Image 1: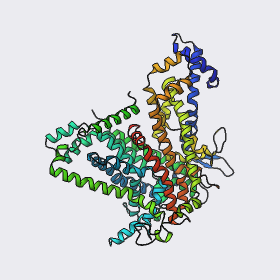
Image 2: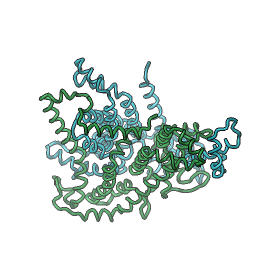
Image 3: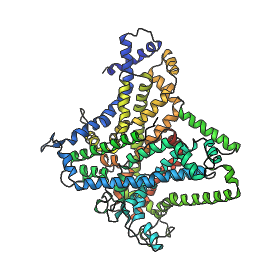
Image 4: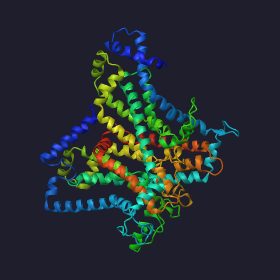
Length: 323
Length: 316
């Protein structure tokens, strides 16, 4: 590319280009482009190395295997076949789905309800807003280590509270059991929701403030109660943002990593019942006994990518504006 | 297109003006009339008190334990039933946690990574967005499309090929693992920042650029003297996003900066690592120390952070 001659080129190029003589000759145009590319090149290089190339490389690596003594050779579908035969693979997917669904029930509904309530209050608005967003700003490890301590089965605060109320105590994150709604996963979701709900709440609040008051006025005159006003005014008026956040949240929760990783100290819980797909990618690549295997991890990465792409595409198609 | 950063400021000013004038709040779900009826007034008071109490408990409560448990003795932290306030205040815990976990070093590491990434992003992403918006080189639209397309790719999916690439960069064969560049350079590949910046630059009329060019200013000069001073709001939004992203990241720093002596870990990774072999109260003290700078940062910049969150778009 011609970006080598930038320095001198730029100095001459700008004025002549700006005067815009109609029959633009080739040389000033080349100079102008070279100048423009000089501004662009840093970001383009970073994208090439750290984004575009890894995308291609992930697919390539998923079809390769290392050769003894260095280098790679083609491996066909063997990496995919191997991970499909790994029982942990299916368990990690089931856990991730469980986390995503539970996080939808808690993490998606709660911020919207909270935003509706906060929007009605005439006092302490700034204070409440700061409260909700404060955990988002904590370093995630700080927040999660706090929950590690709350969940501790010997001296954790939550068990003490249950004890005080004469309720049966729990192992929380380390509670064995692999039912679809397991105590262990619910514990992870609670910590995750506490940490992350502030962002969605504030975005909903901003959306609620844009609803024209006349709509509520009209609905009330027609005799609609509070819940019907929410159903027929609030929700339709915030539909776009609700759909967008739903999609972003599902895509984000399907990539859950740090919550379970810190709460179970990297283990994945009792019998791997909180092990997520991204944790399994990490385990395949770095923590497996014997040879750590980047190729299996890449294959799993490609599968996750496809699942998320199909979900996002299908979701956008299903919720597209009709008519 | 309206410069939304400016419009946020305007909205804020007008909201303040409205508050000063003490005119009625805009109509929401429940009308002021309903709230002013005796029953409405009582219900509102009850709900308000409930919300304030519950929210304080839920959001400040855990943080209360973060700071009070930090000064308890090891025995007191693990005592059953728990003590609601520290019976013996041991501020020495902070000092012990500081030296035992090397919190100061981790804090410095994290700040170094975060501000380094900020500088790299401001230089390269601003330059790229300016080029794509105002200089429009050949293939510029293709580049923009390819950049925006990466927004569709979830970040964690790519960690393995990214790690392998950073461990041995193609063509140049640098090994960046364990160097700050392993965090700085990938952070530049941030399509969201470029999108925000380009959208803002698009809203600046081309006449400014043309007029300066006629006066003989170089493109660099135009960017520095004309575009950037007009772009302060969006630069603030992008800077906050970029600092917070590095500050909160876990998986990537775990892969590229973990396991060195002296430590090169970020706070998050270092605290996680401390779970093994560090007493509970010291670990909590370290977490509390780690939380203080972010809480301070948030309380100082909360207006900008919240405005950026709602105006600058939505992210994960």
